[in-house]
Every structure is written in structure tokens, then in C-alpha cells.
Length: 400
Image (cartoon, rainbow, N blue to C red):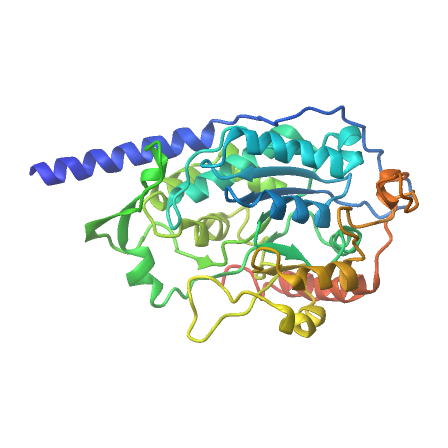
């Protein structure tokens, strides 16, 4: 074997081993601890209300964006894992944790917000980003046993509905559904995304670097069908456990393959779900995001600005992507769609206080956390959910 081939083989082996070790090692490392208040069981006759597990990630300059996003999606029923990138100093993580406690008094009682203490390096377009998502999912499985869906958000995302609206809409959905934008018609991606072989140095180097491209290509897989789509997903707890705990060999086998794929987060969950006999009929072909693309399309969707408010207001999707730092449009969304005041969480049925100068707003005091107060946007989202579930029942949207 030539020296170059030996070097490449060793590099691939190191990347695979590092990736697997990174994924299976779980560190529940919140930067602060808080007592947990038990969530009461659903009362007789009530529609059971779900709970979400949010994985919210951002860069070393995104502390304020992550905090604002958390305030916009907070609810005591949910659990949250916040992650600043590895290049952020530890002092910034402590600052984020302290800001969360001071901004949302309920966090100190429910203990449902956690900050990753030691994130791994992540390289854009590489598999270390997927490893971080899987690591976040596995940590959330350990941190809380009650949630029903896993939601991935970045600091550039923002909600268009309140959590009461979202919980109301998801209350009518079967708990096992996975909202994944996906297709098997990979087209140009076969040559540019599926066949190239890359190695992500973020898996084994102490600092970030660009991914390495091998000169060789590999054939499109024959042992499984390749699916691709949006990297932003809403996954059922059962499916997350399947991917993380891996009682079947499929998630591990595909994990090894996707460790050398460009942008694996655009295909891993999609391919695992659609190649699994257990989960292939659980996919709803929608990522629940409102996005727009420039012409010609770029790597990332269009950044929304103030001129886009009418489009944002007309959208049914619960989340929109993407927004620049301190985008004034976010203030309009807070005021006109979410009813959120600066520095406060979005109010919901669980909030029992009044806005007073010495208090933390309506949500500084809370009552029944199973009480929902859906707003005017909830009805539109609920109708869309009915359409999506109907499409799923007819198998029009699963793994096509």
C-alpha cells in the first residue's frame, strides 16, 4: 500500500473512532443546578399535553441571541439544553447560565434549562455538527424522562407562535411522528454530496479546521436508500432513543457512513428513519420551518428583515429561519405575534403574575402549568397539523 493510501486509511479510521466515541459519551454538564418541581399528571378528561426537548446551539458571540430565543420558547413543561460553540470561554457559559436564572424565575423552581459545559469542536459541513446534535439528544434523554419531541434550533431561528400555541397543536398529533423534510430524489446531490469522501478534523483535533476531501469517490450506497432534506428536525422520543441507544444496528451502520459525508445533518436522520421498518411510516415530510431562498439559492436561506413581516405574519409554521443579530424584525414578532415584552418570557396559561415594576412580569409567578391559553395563531397551526397528520395517515408524505 502506498504511503498516501496508508495515511488516508489511518485518517479515516481515526475519524470514525473519534466520532463514535464522541456520540456515545454523554456528559450531563449543566453550568448550574436547580431543584425540580414535579409536573402533575394530566387530569381526567383532559387532552394530554406533550412536552418538548429543545437543543439550542450558537457561536461564541451568540449568548444574547440564545437567551432571547430561550425567552421566546420557554415553558415549564419543556426541557432545554443550550450550547455555545467550543471556542466560547467558560466564563461565557457561566454568564449564560446566570442570565437564564435571572431572566426566567421559573427556571430556579423547575430546573429545566441546562448549559453544556464542555462542547466538542464542530466544523461547518462536517460530521462533528451531527455528532453535537446526537450528543445533545442523548444528554436530554438523561436529563428528563418526560418529553415527547426533540426540537433543534440555532441562534439564527425564532418562533412565530407561542409555546401554548405549539403545545395545543401538538396535543392532537400522535406522539410517534417525526417531522423531517426528506426526499429520495437526490438529483445533483448524488455527485456533489453523496459520493465525495471527506474527513472532519473537528472530531479529533483540538481546534477547528476545514474538512479534508479525498481524491477518490465511493459509489452511491446499495445496502440502504439515501434520503436528504432539511437539517432542522422535530423528532419523536422513540426515534431519538433508537438513534442514540441503537438496539438495532442500522443507526450505527449509517453513522459510520455519514461520518465521511458532506453536510451529514441533511441526510442522517432522514436515511435512518426511512430505512428502518419500525420508523419508515412515522415521517411527516415537513420541517415546521418558514424559510425563503435567494435566487440563485445559496448555502443558507435568505435573512429575513423588516420588509418581510407580512410574509412572516401570514406563515403557519411555528419557527422561521434565519435572522441576523439584533434584527429589528424580531421586535415586531415579539410585539405583534408573541406578545413578549423585552427581557421577559412569552406569557402563557401557566403565568399567574401581573406586570409590576418590582416583579419579573406575568411569568414571575406561575400557577397550573397544564393550563394552556392558545392565541389567534393557534387555530391556523392546529388546522395545518390536521392536514399533515391526514397526509401521514394516507402515507402520502412518508419516505417517498
